[in-house]
Structures are given as structure tokens and as C-alpha cells.
Image (tube, rainbow, N blue to C red; front, side, top):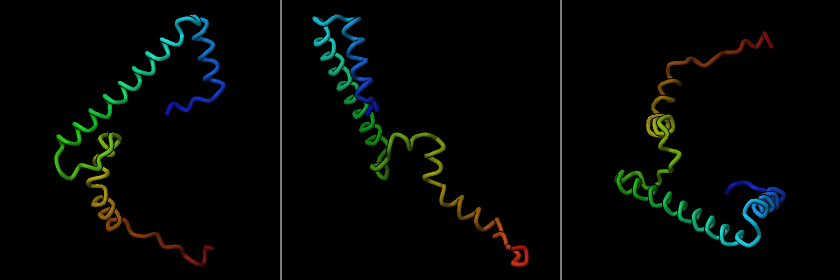
Length: 98
């Protein structure tokens, strides 16, 4: 999820040992894990509510699709591509130039 390697985990653990102390580190780590799980659940609930409120036809909507450019590209991109192909003539290569 965060693309953290083994060396970085060890470094974070050592930093936690220095800053927090070995006696409080397990409880702080458990609290941080609970916070991350709660944050993940909240994000999932917001996504589900958004999908429900948008109505039918948007069940497969991803959060990244809500970016205006991605939204427009997804819904009217095919029409634009077809019209661009009709307007632009295909380039012709002269065989003598090769």
C-alpha cells in the first residue's frame, strides 16, 4: 500500500524506539494501526455513498474517474476521437522518398 521496504520499516522502528521509548511503542503502534484501519474504512464508506448518490450507471465508477479530465474523457472521449479521425486526413508517404 505504501511501498515501504524492509530497511525503511527497520528505520521507522528504530526511530520509534528512540522517540517514543520501548515501553510505549507497542501501544502507540496499535493505536496507529487502528487509526489507519479507521481511515481506510471511512474512505471506503465515502466512496460507496458517492456511488449510491450518483445513481444507476455509475456502479463501476472509480474515485480516480472523478477528476474532471478523466470524467470527460470517459464519457465523451469516444465521440471526440471519432470526430478527430474524420477531420484529420491520413498522412500519405511517397514511396519514392523511402
